[in-house]
Length: 337
Image (cartoon, rainbow, N blue to C red; front, side):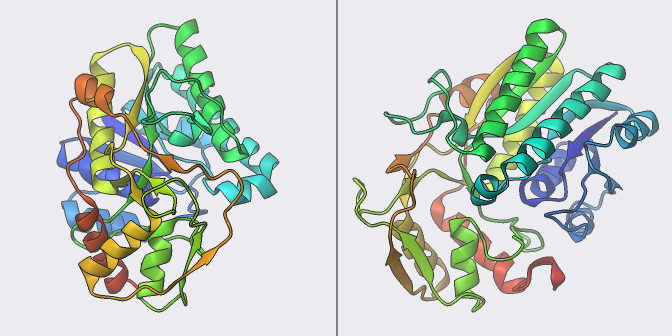
């Protein structure tokens, strides 16, 4: 029996492949490689010594999905596949709704055909919208404020309604906070196409000389140093969270949301300073105006994941910085190297 991982060649997907294999699961990956590289899976195989069966297909293609389910004994699915850039989603909302919603609907339709009713979904803390209190807890009101976040929220609603209609399903909705870091080997890590949208890969590309300086958006927030505070989580901790969610889903029926974060907030400048300390590389920066809609701080309450899944984050900011730098230094051009 195997676990199907959609979008498994991506940043979080490839790290999850490693942790799933280390936990004794066989994995099958489907990925259209729009924002990833098949080389990540070659490196997964190098790290684990185990093969990864890979299909270069789009999850919206139901015939391709049927072929995968016919050729493999799939017992559960981890669903990462989707577009994920907030700014791009504002510019291209229909592309995001078409890709992210249709691929999920196609996936659960084919899963239903093959009586596979266990799914772990890659959601996001963006489903909370602009919350008025911290930390964020799973039972809080939801309300995403951009097309990317709304696709995550809509998919959560789709999967919740699916369970309501058929209680044989087990659905784990994993709400990530800010994944950073890389595998200790330095062989796999975050490899964004073009200029990074996220803070840590931007910092690491400044460090390696690909970008001139870090742009810090706003220094007048109500935080420790005026810059925005976020809950950064090591990607390996996040990957282990998926293993725990699959373990839970295979033994249960239900539909539950889980925050995956550390519960600790780190500001932009604190993260920049931690990176400088961990690597010895100076990161010049400039303060730019705030971006509209950015909240002062966002961090998780992850007690439910600890209680129900037996999961807690283990790695701190220093290790996240060290592991990011090892990956970036060894692979300055990502998988093109």
